[in-house]
Image (tube, rainbow, N blue to C red; front, side):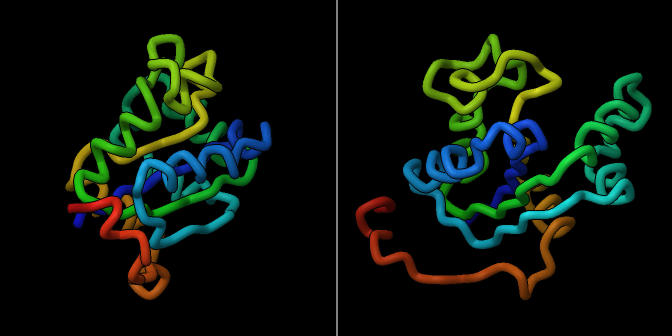
Length: 149
């Protein structure tokens, strides 16, 4: 069963879209196994976005993600990475499909509302970066048979 990290970024929190965003993943059929409302530290932000360290936008990306609270979530499901990324939409909101989170609510790449893991390996690494094992909840969803064959 794949796990993916999804972050509701500061713009999603500030715009009051937390419930809408969480609901889209629930309706998609992914299962929430961990969630935190938190203020991201600079150290965590720099580690999380470390792949971009040498890029010119790294500093502004870190400043943005620590500028206000975020919601960190671990979602689980068959093909969770692909399902979450389709639900989120293209990185550049104006290119995102209508019906996706970014397609419905985003306008600019620097305010694209959510982060989602981009590979199975990164899903594991990112979930482990934000959650200790005891913070993840394994549970049986009563509707599972109606979502997964």
